[in-house]
Length: 128
Image 1 (cartoon, helix red, strand yellow):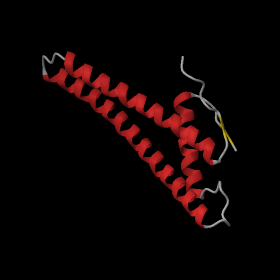
Image 2 (image 1 turned 60 degrees about the horizontal axis):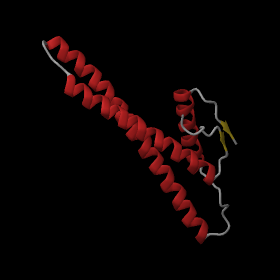
Image 3 (image 1 turned 180 degrees about the vertical axis):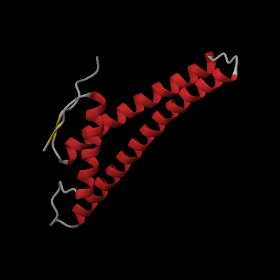
């Protein structure tokens, strides 16, 4: 059994970075298992007619869509982390901004990620 998932999320940088790392780790696990299934399917496939090839192709296509979705999530996380880092750099230059400021677009993206995670794991996240 893995470590317990974080369900209490504060919209501050430390809490979000922990949650983003958790999402990233889940994406890596999903990608690895999908790639493993794809490779195993290729190795053990015994195609006897066109219908078999068509069925295997559909399943492989679904697996590739899963991999693509995880890559999209990882890119969204990288974008969000870049924005957090650039905000940190601006904060050191301008002391008038708060240390934990996020734009509305950032918060919207975070809420979407939380909802995706909630739907995938049936875990209700408490957002502050």
